Image 1: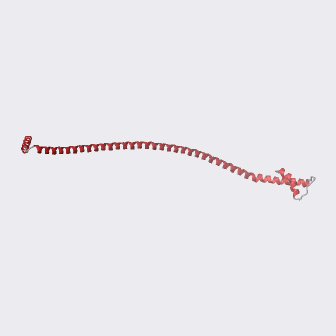
Image 2: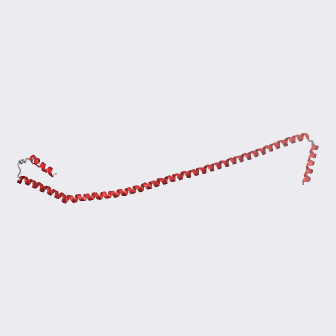
Image 3: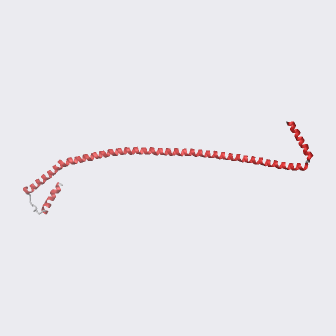
Length: 182
């Protein structure tokens, strides 16, 4: 940068209206060099004196922030691993709970089916019992009706075939049988 400044100095001086020197003059050119060196030295001294601590402080701040960020990153990675492991455990536990619920539902289903089958058997048995009761009742009613019809028919036949004297003999015989039984 210093060399660039030195190289451009004649062009800048000519552009500002100063005439260009064709020969070297210690007074003129040496003064410019000393003046430029002093200005550059002061600039360098100011940069080193004030800029160095500022840049050093900035460098320390950046290093501190980088360390903090690295610590935060490490903590975040640890937390991420912890959360991932917890998530895996929760997922496994959820699957286990789901499987237990399926197994329990299957047991309940089997119990319900068994109870339904048992109830169906009871209903069928009760219906069969009702059918047998109705059948016996029908048989009894049929026998009663048949007996009544037979008695009516026998009465009619007896009335036609047995006379008054036969009836008295049968009645006397019946009464004497009853007397023996008593």
